[in-house]
Image (cartoon, one colour):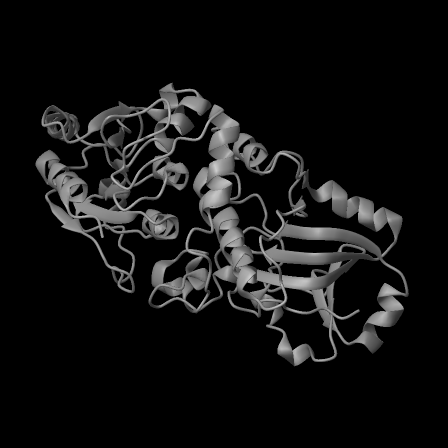
Length: 416
């Protein structure tokens, strides 16, 4: 049977196929109309680490698109069926073992694109959860991050879905049989960066965004919520329920919205001590006003479940640009939910703004005493690191009262 693209080829690096074949480690899409499929370089890359002037265009050993006549002598008459939905993460371990890149790009992008199938005529909802996670270019535990976050969260999100690595591909070669995936998405970071849209934000999920410049990838408004709720519940044993004002109504309750400041004062890229103390003082003054509860946390000093419990009850998250802001994907969306991200003045990256937009949180960038925020359809133009020594330095400035004023406005403005 021929392969089809059930949702169309909407985003480079995230391509969903029905009836995708594998034989002797090579992936095959069989179609009577090869020109209707995207170029292979927009589907996957040759599995090597990205490097300067390195050609990662896929070879015939990686993937081929064949007519039925050309495929018949290769794939033969019979195939072993891999049923259900399969996610094939075709990357190497170059950036995969990183909390943000695994969850904020690979998983988020895959789930965003997959959820869009719920709008395709003839596909019933709710969509089944992925049945297979396949990492054909990963050996043993190379996908796990040093902080030990990726693995436990994956088990919490999909307790019944195994991760198959390079040894599966070796088993398929040893069996010398054709396998066919009932439905599969090939996810490839280098292929995603081939999209012209990647040059706007330099993120692999740029082409999956439907906000403004992105392609028209229509997805359910709260596509992430089923997974967020499952991860939180399976990690801490319960699910905090928040009202529109940002107050946790379920037990253990909060009396006010919770503001969490994720401190990086024990690591690189941190505030000057004076700026840190000024920020803490300004936040505590908000608490003294009776506007919110305030948590000042160092994630590296907390257990994994304590981290998830904290963010699952948070309405406004504050922190320097960094991996800790990935935790916003477990923060419940509400009319008040907000991420306040501090950069060294004039620097700007889109990593956590893209997460915030996907989650339904407002995003503010802070340059010391200046704030920037953009409505739907508008973005900061380009990417700015500035001097790397400043961007990653130990004396990043922040004006505490400026951050406090953003919080005050977010918690007191009328709810739409």
